[in-house]
Image (cartoon, rainbow, N blue to C red; front, top):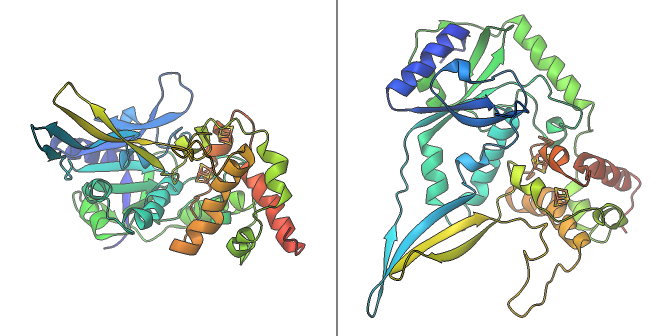
Length: 350
Ligand code: SF4
Ligand code: SF4
């Protein structure tokens, strides 16, 4: 399918058409405090803030909710009955996803379909069409370019929109789902215009200045740098609050608990959990293999830039910068990475 031209009016009509046909539409919506935006359902396009701030939280929770029921159980006299939850979902379109968020979903597909196929994750993935909106380069801590993406990356997107001024978009279908979405309207064909090419180039150049690309062999260097002083130098500041992981599009650890619902049964839930917290790895014996905050902070960085790349051939970070903005202790991941790059360049493995 050819790329298309979409006016704001045509996009508004598409939102109404989707809602009328039972497909929910989610888009960045200004928060009530007017400080940023969150991905929320909309019924009209004017409820969304497409060209505004990077939403405070990522798309992750639309596929992996912060808390969800995995199954219910009923206690019988000599037995337990297990009641599965549905793994099919109402169709939804995410409109105006940031490319770093769409990429985060694609990166997580690898672990969610790895040794066990997570049917809740893939049920939501099957029901969802992601329409990303190319970013102009949000601020000084974004570093998508450094991790192999860009402000116009199409990884994880079904359609990529690029703004053409204030009231029009160039739409590039990326997948069959994206083609099917664009086929709902009679949008004019449009070969990529010069203004779109210029927008994409300027955004890439802006973000590339924030942090150099990951050097080749970086994940191997990291694997050999377990005791690098950089971790000790910075990790003592970390409060272990887990805010970085909560807002991160790619952090995906969870805990599973059984919660009683009356005397006759209950629900098995999974709840997000965070490796920076002090109890994350505590054994039943009381022993904690990651006893210090240094070890916990190091684990988060190692998982993203060494362990995940070795196993899945993908960095577990899309460079969105949310962890930097959310951290109450001023921890700065791109700054840490910059110091580690310098150590690698100097040939230093401690
Ligand atoms: S680690 Fe930080 S910069 Fe990387 S994806 Fe997570 S929140 Fe974004
Ligand atoms: S790095 Fe910052 S946000 Fe993350 S756990 Fe430590 S203090 Fe909290």
